[in-house]
Length: 595
Image (cartoon, rainbow, N blue to C red; front, top):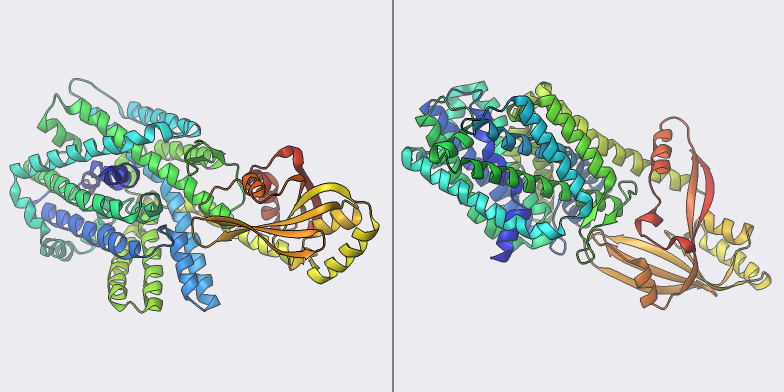
């Protein structure tokens, strides 16, 4: 039960707060007739069945690396199965797009969640609140939320689950209350009403899918957060929440039939249920949207950390906000970028209904990418039953993403622009790194050993141990050659240290490999891409007491396109700061490179 409550707080905040706005924005552009209400409810019910339940709960969560899920994990699983370099390249590229879309989604989700909840204040009896006050209130909440990130969420995270349990209980009660007033809405469980609605409304019915998809925003968190809680509590929690959300949507639908003039369905349903309990419900809804936003922000930090450790994004300064929980991190660059973008989005769109008109494109596009990789993996595994289901849900994903394309001129282009920032950064950085290493003057291992052995015999040695960071012992980095052969800095004991990122998320091992030659030992640290390692601790455990740590720095003189890469390298920290090594021992060796 504890795991289920935690999952409700950490995983389902986004999809759990979508009832605040989904039906409201849908019926802004649709007449609330009996046929339309049942058709939309049927679409929502079956969307909840097909996408969160089948695509993520059943299909995606079957695939993991040591219990961890997510876009990067799917890409790694595919690469471990495929023998085609071209196919691996395509899937890697798709994973880049998927990661970027999730980051774009990370801006719009807090914006629409907080804004939609604060809009409920307009229905407080005997109080007049203007739209300007609503926007200001939402912005203040967002500012406090992002300012709080540096302190970490460890102390308050334990309250997330219980608060969300109260929220979901409230949704269930309101849903039952609405259904009892008009129980015939339960007929919408029959998919006939969904199909009939789309066929009768034609093009308009097709475009409505772009609003219906809002009911499953955040469902990808089920898979992305699988490593934090395990698949079992997430699956159990979703079984409960699927029922709760379905009942609430049906209750809202029943309320529309009784009150076709309604403007904000969930909040007016709550007011109709009990005016005296309305303010507590409003406060609860704001708390729920803050928790949903917090989960998205923490998710962004984790995604960026994965991207850094897998070397597809440049190093960023990372702070650890908890001594007990290594996964509690804070990335200031990401935090302030998200805050500025969220405030801009709130000011630009002003209302949740305007924002909903632009929301959903990146969400559905990311689902499509997940579906394509699932199809590829099940095909390679020859799991044909899963393959058939993956084909069906991916086809539905494409229907939804095509319906969301009409949102591009309405503001959907903002989500694409927001996703372009990380996507272009990934492309420039990965291509720049390849180019950089292709033009660096590495020395073959055999040539280096011959020269080192000769110099080691004749030159004076510095007492103690020196560590040299190296990527591959088959090719020796130019900065090592420069340090030892040109500057004559040779220690009695030299350790070449390599840090390898494993394709699985967790696990850290440190071990000595065969000596490169006399007085040069080779030490390797293997780490999962979600691990937070203490290199000093690993070195001490293996008897390494270094006096100095040397690492390479590049002074890049670039022309044309490569100037962007050079700029990124210049403004971002080195990998040394990422691993938080003692500054008193560090010696950076600069090598000038022309690109």
